[in-house]
Amino acid sequence: MVEDRWVDVYETLRKRSGAYSSGCYDSMPYILMNYHGTLKDVLTLAHEAGHSMHSFLSRSAQPYIYSQYPIFVAEVASTFNEQLLLQHLKTQVKSERDKAYLVNYQIEGIRGTIFRQTMFAEFELQIHKWAEEGTPLTPTLLKDYYAQLNREYYGPEMVIDPELAIEWARIPHFYYNFYVYQYATGLSAALTLFQKAMHDPVAKEHYLTFLSSGGSKFPIDLLKEAGVDMRTEAAIDSAMDYFQELLGELRKSVSIQS
Image 1 (tube, rainbow, N blue to C red):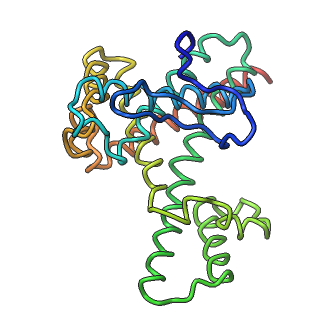
Image 2 (image 1 turned 90 degrees about the vertical axis):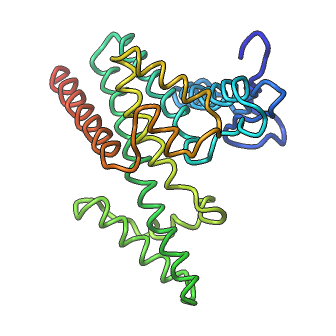
C-alpha cells in the first residue's frame, strides 16, 4: 500500500469521487480514493483495504473461475476492517471524550448501515413492486412513502423535515441494481465474525479461510463455514447485542466526563 503505491491517494482533476478497490486476477488490488486526512478518510482506507485483502487472498488461493467473491459477501471484509481499526483506536485514546467519539462513530455506523440501509431496501423493494403492478411512480407517491418509512423506522420523536421526503432522489443505488440490503447483511455478518475472531484463534483462522475462498461455494455456505449462519436470526441478534454493548460504553464514557 505504501512502498509499492497500490493506493491512488489524493484528489486530482477529473478523478471520480468516493473510494474503490479494484484490479483483476493477475494484478495486485489497487485502491482509488480522495484522502483529506480526516478520521472518515482513515476508516475509508481501512474499508477499501478490507476489499483488497479479500481480493488478494481469493485470487492467490483460487483458480480464475472461482477467484471473484459473490456480491452477497462483498461488504464483510471491508466492514470487519473498520471494526478492527476502531477497536485499535479505542485502546489508544487518552480521554473519555475521545473514546466517546469513537464509540459514537461505531454506533452511527451500525445505525446508518443495518437500520438505514434496511429501510432503503424496503423502499427499493416497494418501488419494484409498484413497477411490476403498473402503478405510476409519481414524485408524490415516492415522497409520501419515504417519509412514512422514516417515521416507522425512527419513531415519533424524530423530527421529519419536509426536505427529507425527497432524499430518495439523490441516492444512486435506487437507479440501478437491487443492492443496498447487502450493506446490512454484510455488516451483520462482519460484526458476528469480528466478535468471534477477537476471542477465539480458531475463529480467526476460519475468517482468513473465508477471505481465501473467493466464489468457490455459495455465499451462504461461505459465511456459515466462517462462523455465521445467515439463514438464522443469530447474526442480527449478535449485531444488536453488540449495538447494545456500545450504547453502554457510550453512556459510561459520557457519565465519567460529566
